Image (cartoon, rainbow, N blue to C red; front, side):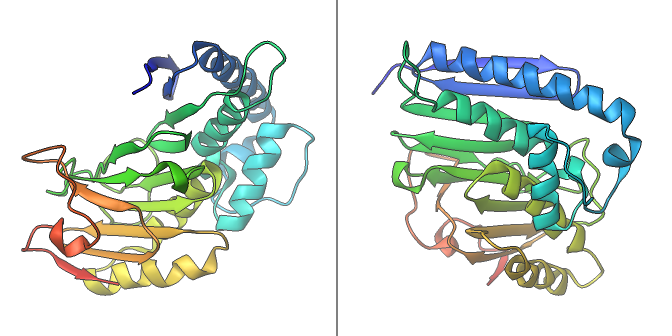
Length: 262
């Protein structure tokens, strides 16, 4: 197995982890993060509507990070800031995979920004599900195989994190071709999962996945019920033997006291 570096950086609200076999690629990702975050901060100061809007905006600025967030938010029917973590991660990943005259692109690359993840790797990765107060929290995970990448993974929760959620889901995890789309879609779907009828609320979220073009799959948990739609990565149980993969069927991974539907 290839030796990998893991670097953690924080900047105000941002909490970022970068993994790669290439330290040079990690440095390029860090440079991209600080560059685009500075542009974003300066834009927000002068454009309060961009920062506060819960709905998509119809503007173009010529600033890459801003326009990427605008595009993603339109696709997902959310405000631009709902895509910020994923957009920053995607721009960082682009730098890690960029052809450079001095350094080759990273062979193994993972970026996690505030819970939003993008992976483009020649090795498999195991990702744990962070489901807030739900008993599933950090007990199940997803095996991201190398031939499933590049992939973006976005998670939104009403029970954990500082991001605003208008719903009541413990976790909505979206798999998409990039992190910008996954981030925005997770917010949109999570906002819909609410109401006294838990099963009905999850099914409403699953039905809404078809409203967003490009989504690969979705997994939703709320209390003792879970739902899934589309193609989601292979799942495994983290408790007990962390290395034992329970292949294929979700029913082999989710505890028996949970209801499962799709």
